[in-house]
Amino acid sequence: DAGVTQSPTHLIKTRGQQVTLRCSPKSGHDTVSWYQQALGQGPQFIFQYYEEEERQRGNFPDRFSGHQFPNYSSELNVNALLLGDSALYLCASSFVTSGTGAETQYFGPGTRLLVL
Amino acid sequence: GQNIDQPTEMTATEGAIVQINCTYQTSGFNGLFWYQQHAGEAPTFLSYNVLDGLEEKGRFSSFLSRSKGYSYLLLKELQMKDSASYLCAVRDSNYQLIWGAGTKLIIKP
Image (cartoon, rainbow over all chains, first blue to last red):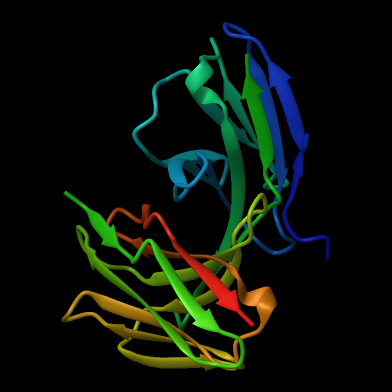
């Protein structure tokens, strides 16, 4: 089991450009969440996808959009990049055990985005 | 508003025990996570508590009191590799994960 994988690992873009980040969840996980983490801060929730639909959304503008595919993999798209979008973008996949309700959530290695 | 409070930084000695506290005020509660994050890396899942009490997992234990809005992570037999940030996160009634800023743990020989 490869765990959660993300691509690319690093990316440099210029202001105004668009970027697509990709995530493959851990085997058996059906829910994917995306987070933005600035240096020295905790992750900030962007949105969560389940059954190919956006289930929850954090306080991020519409420039941030996403998609989940039938195989549960997901993409995060950011349009009209701003300097402030420079951060580590983390994907997490999760699974809730029916009966116990115990949830496990694992993060991928992240994509470090630098906007110049 | 929703808030997760953790100490910014703690220092402990190799071989000792350290307790990292987390208090929260959120709109509802659907579980609390602890993660370890080394600099430049993604967070690593440590524990999940949804019921009151202590969950033990090797050298790491996590405690939850829902009535007090309080949790702690206990690390025993500290090793140098335990130097990292420890993040507390709470899932609220909307199933959003609210994160603390993390506690930077420094282990000294």
